[in-house]
Image 1 (tube, rainbow, N blue to C red):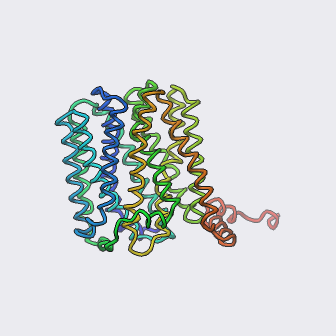
Image 2 (tube, rainbow, N blue to C red):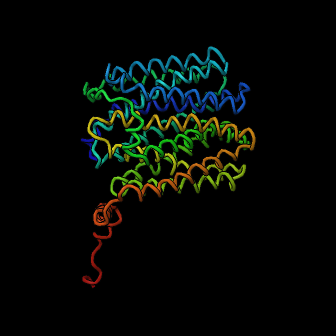
Image 3 (tube, rainbow, N blue to C red):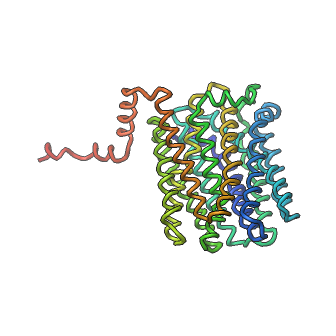
Length: 414
């Protein structure tokens, strides 16, 4: 992508980075703080489910809010409420109260993410959509990774980390408030229709549910897994960070390939890689810190890009004016998986130990591989000649091909 295409999106990406960093810090910290306060894994999973229930509610209503007050006002209102819910959690250490505050936070973050993603999708085309969403995801994962190390630096006791989260959410308002006043028009009065979203792309719909069932479960219960195998607080932060850093490594390359090839093929490859890493963590890594670091890095490298790949696939099939609906819908389906995943997996951890987390994710990913193969035959694949042209274009634009073409012809020079 050219600088002229990226420059108008910079304030929005900076805002997203601050916002997502605060949210990612909060997610990991709440799990560790709850464990320190004596909550059981099942209770911690229930608190995480509160966030995801709120997220589903927010996805249903966000298009109405966007239409009523616009993108910037929606973002401002929801960021303020999310900031208040974060700081309120330190006032009362109670599972029921935390569940309620996480539910409120879920409603707010669904609205915030749908606002940002619909804004981005309105500014791009199918030719560069996955690359733009990949840059967004790199910002997402990079900010979350950096935020993880505030936990061992500050400590899990006291109110400081809750205050830092609240500050980050409030400061996320600054970049878009100081940027130019251009923003997408209010979305059409489109009713939130699950059937319509399903018809746009069944594969993307199921894919977002799978991402919720797996990636969200890792984000919620990864600290519990790492603690269960005996890692220290600093090592837990490293473990979580490596899972997120891995996603940064392959986020943009997979986006580039999916823009030029069949997105479903790239989704399939990413899912197979995630499954292989999950099986390694479940059956081979054991309690060795280095093996778990390697396994979670590879898991994140393939699993974290899945959401942006599925979102790009759905937006490819969306009509003009449907991007806000699709963004909210994909987040809604993600939240459905996120409601079920942490709750179900936390019960498995209670009964079978920490390795059950990645046995669970591997089973879900295996089923998604089967479904992806089925969808690749159900909806017409890219015509053979179009695939050849895309592959030739990919070769022409690749670094290694250009270097090869630039080399002198040895036969002629000889």
